[in-house]
Length: 218
Picture 1 (tube, rainbow, N blue to C red):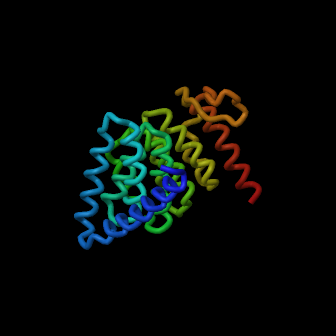
Picture 2 (cartoon, rainbow, N blue to C red; picture 1 turned 120 degrees about the vertical axis):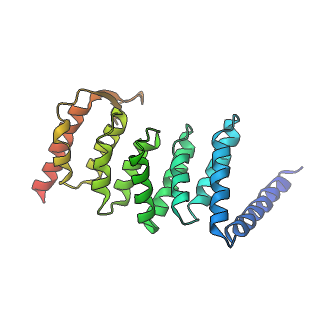
Picture 3 (cartoon, rainbow, N blue to C red; picture 1 turned 45 degrees about the horizontal axis):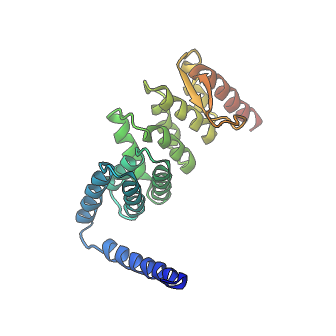
């Protein structure tokens, strides 16, 4: 095939993809559609072929974001647990889209994973999603992540509180100032990209200082 034919094949495949997606999303019974997407996600997460799994999960994340209901939020959070960083980025962006349009669905989904004390990698991503959306209940939800026995989850929530920027978050960090759990955090000055080791307590003290400093400026 000539290069022009390959290019035309790409255009044709894109048209077929869009048409197939439109027909799928036009399914009248949204419960049937949600069950289908949830089942396909479970199957994709179990695939040994990680390249195929990532391909499917990326597409499924986009589809799940377009179907309302709690099952789709739970499914997106499951995708957010995947080992592939690219898949997690796609799932995170999908959850953000849902959160901006239907925040209550996302908030309730996060409450559900908190209630069952989930410890997947999604738990380090969800506080940032809440901070990015910035709804009034974000502070209360992020604070619940601080109670995690997993230091990395706690550290993520702590940093997300700083990102949220609500000075009221400083009070929630007071009981962490002596926490000696060690964690690795990103550092813009770290040329190796491995992050730096610090303690929850040190992060808490720095966060309190920054949040209270913002309060004083206001």
